Amino acid sequence: MSDAPQHHRSFLPHSQRATILGEIHARPFRPVEGSRAFLLYAFEVLAGEAARSDRAALDDLCRAQGQPGPREDARHHLIPFAGGTLRWERHAEFTTYTWDGALADPTRPFEAVLGTPPFGEGFQQPGPLVVAVRLDIVIDPGPSRSRLLSGFEPASLCVSDVEDGRGTLATDFRQDGDGRTRVLLIDNGLTPAEAGGLAQRALEIELYRTWAMLGLPTAQSAAPTVTRIEGELASLAAAIRESSGLAANRNLLDDLTSLTADLEACAAQTAYRFGASGAYHQIVVDRLTSLVEHAANGYSGWAEFLGRRLEPAMRTVTAVADRQANLSRKLARAAQLLRTRVDIELEQQSQELLNSMNSNARAQLAMQETVEGLSVAAVSYYVVGLLGYVFKASKEAHVVNVDPAILSGVSVPLVVLVAFFVGRRIRLTHRRRGGHHP
Image (cartoon, rainbow, N blue to C red; front, side, top):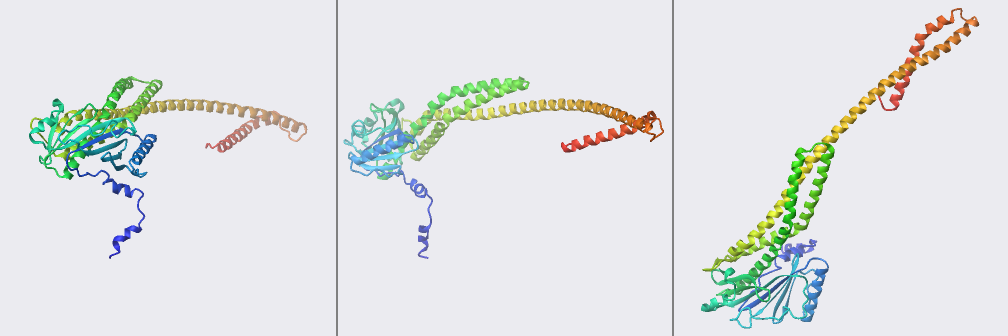
């Protein structure tokens, strides 16, 4: 029994086993103590050359700090940097760099902690910047809390109490002079684990909120195309009801096929962005739920504020995606209707052609039978004529004493019957050889 737990070591593991087991631990909360500043930057980095350049730049940055670079298959990496910690993470379509370090003056949040660019002059931007966040954690200053909130825009300031009041999160979701969204976490008795978890969730809310919103411009740019296709489909549907004739229906089918191609091209261009926006939005909802926040007196809560701003944008994205899906189904039904109509008309034309061919065949058969009847008469005439010469010769040779004319007349019915049956047998033989039956 003692050897039983070791048996699995001899099993051949799945090639992705280590990856999927390690993914659950890929982004753990890091305990945070005291006043601290976080800087998060997210750059669009798609697969291919951009991803390789990003990895090479990270390797150079690590070597400059005397630290090893990430493994080839790593999706996150942590190194000491500039008196704090720098964390690199690779996501599906972007890369994040997050630096955190102690605040120089715990009573003055959002003061400069690093120069510009954020990680030194040697930092190479891996792609277009999409998200920039500054989150500062300060110990509750008591009565001077209002001074900390005075730097935010009052019209959009959101303040939420979390962890049963042991922490307060505040932000106005606006960019400051450095182009970063400011988030303030006031620590009023949080444990290091709670402070680290809240900081990470707050950063992720802003990160994924911004990426989710990328679907809105895509939806707005696709909406006119979808509207145009809807209008043209309505016109085609009216034309389909009134159309008749194979040529007209074929022209409508060509127009419908062209319209379907336009829709498929539009859907292909937007499918990834719409799907990604939906996934990012769900992450934001999950993070907001996990905050278990309560709006501070006189302020909007995070979920309430984002619900008023983010939800309409996501509904727009969903609406355009739904319109595309509905249009695709309608176009498919209209195309099926037209194809059925064209097939029926083609069958009717084929039936008419077959009927015409049958009529021609019957006429040809009647003519053939007439010709065959005349052929029997002609053959009989010539055979009787030949027999007349035979009868005359026989008379002259005294072989027979009967008048040749009488013999010729008597032979006519017999010759006609023989010619008829011989001709019929020849026709039957040809029909059997040609695969026909009498």
